[in-house]
Each structure stands twice: as structure tokens, then as C-alpha cells.
Amino acid sequence: MNIVVCVKYVPDAQADRTFNEDNTTDRSNVDGLLSELDEYAVEAALKLVEGSEDEVTVLTVGPDGAADAIKKALQMGAHKGVHVLDDAIHGSDAPATSLVLAEAVKKASGGTPELVLMGLASTDGTMSVVPAMLSERLGLPQVTQLSTLEVADGVVKGRRDSDTASDSFEAPLPAVVSVTDQINEPRYPSFKGIMAAKKKPVETWSLADLGVDAGQVGLDNAATKVTSFTARPPREQGEIVTDEGDGGTKLAEFLAKAKLI
Amino acid sequence: MAEVLVLVDHTDGQVKKNTAELLTLARALGVPSAVFIGSSVEAARPRLAQFGAAKVYVVDNPDVTGAVAAPLAEALAAVAEQASPAAILLPTGGVNKEAGARLAVKTGGGLITDATNVQPGDGGVATTQSAFASNYTVESLVTKSPAIVTVKANAAAPAAAQAGATVVPVEVTVSEVAKAAKITGTEAKAKSGRPELTEAQIVVSGGRGTSGDFSPVEAFADTLGAAVGASRAAVDAGWYPHSNQVGQTGKQVSPQLYVACGISGAIQHRAGMQTSKTIVAINKDEEAPIFELVDFGVVGDLFTVLPQANDAVQAAKS
Ligand SMILES: Cc1cc2nc3c(=O)[nH]c(=O)nc-3n(C[C@H](O)[C@H](O)[C@H](O)COP(=O)(O)OP(=O)(O)OC[C@H]3O[C@@H](n4cnc5c(N)ncnc54)[C@H](O)[C@@H]3O)c2cc1C
Ligand SMILES: Cc1cc2nc3c(=O)[nH]c(=O)nc-3n(C[C@H](O)[C@H](O)[C@H](O)COP(=O)(O)OP(=O)(O)OC[C@H]3O[C@@H](n4cnc5c(N)ncnc54)[C@H](O)[C@@H]3O)c2cc1C
Image (cartoon, rainbow over the protein chains, first blue to last red):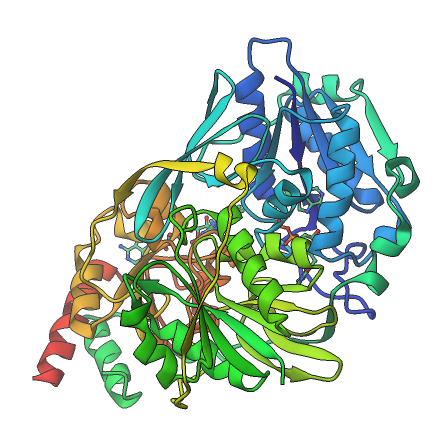
């Protein structure tokens, strides 16, 4: 079973993330990396192909720097990479991103993929919608936000937790699957992995390579636009007391004064 | 005026508060109509009428539930085809975001998730969201119709406005591919008896600093009538269920009061709680970043501070 894992290159959450003048995400002045939640998808894919001849292809749609996200996944053990890179993609909304991904998945798998694995959410847009959109576009079943994953005899099974219940899902392959950060413990690249990654093939495709018209993507064609952004005013630090045997009492006094009890 | 569809969140016809909030918001955008999935619409109708639903589109088909995205999206698409709505509002949560996502692809409409406000805008539906761990507030415009917006709890105060709530049954035939992913078993989670995390006025959370003993956190929560939250460190250690996790990969909460006990305040935890009205923390380490956010902080051991606070609050209440 050959697997395509979709990974996103995102600004580091530890840095001061911000926006550009055109209200798009600043992806050049903030250090980027492989979205941490996509490491779980890469790990899940590697576990599924372990001990077989099957291959894992990592696919990203993103700017120049997104090559780093592919590199990290290759270092973890993925076999090859595909980077869809085209200036016309800048500012794409989620539907347009899923359109590009759908065409790239088809091309990368020579028609229909056997399994597409994705993360719970990107750590920048955090929408958790691209897997559902990709499933819709590819006409494949969607089994998403799984905290366990099992693939056998052409069937994918897993558990999805909601607030009120744990549901066991299953679907026939091929399917689009996303996994949560509860599913596994992503491996760190080993020294051997880092060296091996240097020789792994990475292809770079443009929109033209995918047969996607630039008029379907990008900021100007988005169905949603950010019109303004405002930094939340920093919270003003209130009173900090050190417990000298009366910390709890003081806390209760604060709550009473603030009319919270 | 164009119709605005609101997906009803209900349990056996018992309509949840978020639906009343969405109907209230929908009235500013057009004529609200409810979309009801299931067989108990008669139980739901009075409440839907009370909050202004002109029509109630009913999809009563065993292939469509609120728990699987693809059939739900097909049902919503069938209703949208009939109603040609200007906007479709869904409560954030469950599979609704994903159903909205599929609907955006089907209809060509724009999608906004986790909105905290929805209103008429210049050239489309305008929304408000948080971005980058709630460090930013973002205003957006949906320029392609229908505007598909998933809305967070407490986005509006429900305001009654009686309407007809005329039932309109909608026939839906779910495609084979949408039926291919299915639920083969369900295990209900035990109810805690405490308020729901995302709706609670007060949340008391515990982190790694509890060392696995949540009893003082729970006791204080019960005294305050609060929900209990947990950091990911506490969840990963198996001390508390994942459904109680607060943060980027857990719940985003915005209560009147958030009490963080033995939680350091990592950016991913802040992402879920820093829009709380008042924040209080108890932490042994005076350098803990959580103190940057607090209105009141106690540098101390939660195992002595919490029980004392609990006694003092109980005394003040009685
Ligand atoms: C602050 C902010 C707000 C935004 N608001 C909106 C909005 O309201 N509406 C809208 O339509 N768009 C919005 N966008 C744009 C949207 O985030 C991007 O189009 C993005 O590529 C898809 O959404 P996501 O990042 O939320 O992905 P999610 O749906 O959260 O991602 C889930 C999974 O999809 C895969 N994936 C996502 N993006 C890529 C990629 N580029 N390459 C490979 N795999 C990928 C990964 O496996 C990922 O784990 C916003 C972006 C930002 C940064
Ligand atoms: C992609 C990603 C997503 C994430 N999502 C989330 C998320 O949704 N939610 C989340 O919470 N985290 C999330 N994290 C993890 C986050 O980065 C932190 O690791 C986590 O929040 C730490 O939890 P903590 O504060 O309980 O533990 P720690 O950081 O270990 O802090 C424990 C604190 O307890 C204090 N303490 C110890 N003993 C006592 C005592 N007896 N009394 C008082 N104080 C005491 C210590 O001084 C310390 O400050 C995510 C991380 C990543 C990479």
C-alpha cells in the first residue's frame, strides 16, 4: 500500500506570528517548520509501511521554505517528496488549497491513491477542514480525527472521540484519513535518517504541471478575505502574592471582590 | 430577504442554547430557517419558533446523522439547493466543521470556522475570529455565496422573536460514497455531572503540577459550580480524559473565570484559555509564564492553597 501524507509548512508557534500588509500570514519573517500535528500523520504512515516494500510520499503546497517540511518528513523516514510551488498560490483559502492538493495527490499516485494521511489541523490556520475537502474532491470516503488507526484487508478502522462518545469508524480503501496527536509518539530523525534524506527524491511541481488554472487559486480568487487584524492587547498582570500560609484565603478574597463568587 | 440556514444542535429534539444563539445572529443576515436532522422535530419546533425560525427543513433519513460528515453535507446541500440561502450557520463542534468544509466545495461558497461574531458586511457576510493562539482578532468577509460559517458557543445572547417554524420535509438520497465511511460502534462517555467545558462560566484546570491528584482541583470546581479542565501534560500522563483538555488541540474556552492550577502556561495552552475574562493561577514557580496572564496569582503549592481557598469560598457562600 502506497501512502501520500499531506504536510503543511507553518510559522513557528513559539515565534511572534503575524500578518503581511495584504492580510495574509507572514511566512517569510517568521521561522517556519513542519506543522507539529502533521508529524503524527507521518509517523502513522511510517508504521503502516514498516517491513514492507511500500512507500510513503510526503506532499506539501507552500512557499520556498516548505521544502524544509518535506526534508523533516524524509529525515523521519518517508521515501520521497512532492512540493507544489507556485507564486499564484499565495493567499489561497482552504477550498483552493484542497483543489491543488487533490490534483497533486492524483498525479503523485498515478490516478487514485490507496491511502491519504493528514494531520488533525494545521498549527497556523487551525481549521481542521482540508481533509474533508480533499475527500469531497477526490470522491473518497473520509475517516478523520482518528486516535487509533488500523489498516487490514483493504479496510481502514479507527476510533474518533467526541465530547459525548467514542465512535469506531471504518471505510474501504482508498480513503482520506486524518489522525490526532493522541495516536502515537512521532520519532525524532536519527543521524542515519538525516543522512539518508539527502539522497531521497523531491519533485517540485507548478500549477501548470497539475493542470490547475491560476484563476482558481490565490488571494484574488479566495471566497473569504481577511479585512483586518488586531493584536489582542496584552493582558495586564494583576496582583501576585506568595503563599505564606494565607494564599488560599487571599485567592478567595480576590474572587469575592471581583464578584466571581 | 434571502434565507439564512441554521443547523440545529439537539438531542432527541431538545434544542441546545447554541442554536438559539445562531438563530439570533441569523436574523441580522436575512430570514432564518432551521435545518433539523432526525425524527423528533415536533419536540424542537416550539423553541425554534421562539427564536425566529420561519421554516424548519427536516431531514429524517437514517443515513443522515449528526455524527458522520459526508451524509450530513449531502443533506445540507439538498436543503441549500431548495432554499438558495445567503448564509449557512453551523455550531462549531463535532463533525460540523467538516460538513461545512464539504459543503463549501459542493456549493463554491466561502468557509469561515470558529467565528465569534457574524454580521452583515460590505459585499458579503462579515465575521470575527481569533488567530495565532488568540493573539490576534481577525475580521473577515465571505465574498462568495453562500457564506458557510461555523460559530462558537456564546457568540450572541439569545433573543426571542416568535416566527412560524413551518415544517418543510426534505427528501435526501445519500450517495454510496458518502455511506462508505460508517460508525460500527459507539461507546458513550461517562457524564461528570459538571457543566460543559466550552459553556461553563467558570473553569478550574489542573496540569502536571497536580502530580496526578485532581481531587483538590475537582473539589474547588464543585464549590464554584465550575467545569474541570486539564493541560495536555496531565492528559498525556493519563490523569484526565482528553475531552477535558484545554488548548490548541483541546477545547478553546472563554469563561468569566479561569483558574489554572499547576500549569506553566505554554503557548498551546494559552491558545485555549487566554480570552477568558478573569484568569487566576496557582503555581509553585514564580517565573511560570502563566503569571504573565493573570489577574491574580498565588505563588505556592496547589495542595495547600486550593483546599484553603475552597474552605474560604465555602465559608463566604454560606
Ligand atoms: C490565521 C489564518 C486564518 C485563516 N482563515 C481562513 C478562513 O477563514 N477560510 C479559509 O478558507 N481559509 C483560511 N485560511 C487559509 C487556510 O488556512 C489555508 O488555505 C490552508 O492551506 C488550509 O487550511 P488550514 O491551514 O486551516 O488547514 P487544516 O484544515 O487545519 O489542515 C489539516 C491538514 O490538512 C493538510 N494540509 C493543510 N494545508 C496543507 C498544505 N498547504 N499542504 C499540504 N497539506 C496541507 C495537513 O495534513 C493538515 O494537517 C486562514 C489561514 C490563516 C493562517
Ligand atoms: C502541536 C502541539 C499542541 C499542543 N496542544 C496543547 C493543548 O491543547 N493544551 C495544552 O495544555 N498543551 C498543549 N501542548 C503542550 C504544551 O506545549 C505544554 O507542554 C503543556 O501545556 C504543559 O502542561 P503543564 O503546564 O501542565 O506542564 P508543565 O509545563 O510541566 O508545567 C507544570 C507546572 O506546574 C507547576 N507545579 C508543579 N508542582 C506544583 C505544585 N505542587 N503546586 C503548584 N504548582 C506546581 C510547575 O512550576 C510548572 O509551572 C501542545 C504542544 C504541541 C507541540
